[in-house]
Image (cartoon, rainbow, N blue to C red):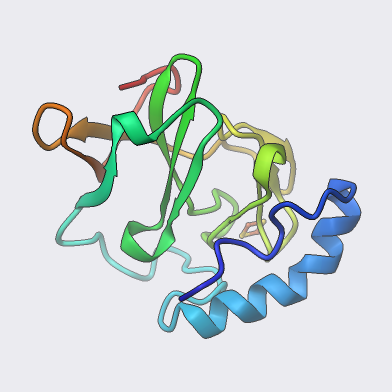
Length: 159
Ligand code: FES
């Protein structure tokens, strides 16, 4: 099983931690995600023919502050804050690498060091645009959460 992130929970200052983890994370991700390595995709891959990704998580299992990694299912993260549950794409807006969770600090891109906060807003370039917020719904009332990776929603949308 792939580690959630080699950058989680180390309790070290974020910037130096990212520098340390850049190579390590890229290697781990490349090894664990064949075909989805940390290389810019440049839009070369077409859209996913099955954009609806059903998780094994319910809204009740998403207390505020939780961040779950679904890069393998569909290149997204599921998060929760005080307002509810939401999903962010894991695809960096600079050149398409998959960003890595850095816990409460947000997300970091191993390719060129862009950083995003937990709302998906850019905190450090070269990326200029925020991570896309994706549509989330319950498959059935109180049932598993489903993310539509083809549908962008406003950043304040919560389930
Ligand atoms: S692809 Fe993420 S910073 Fe360049």
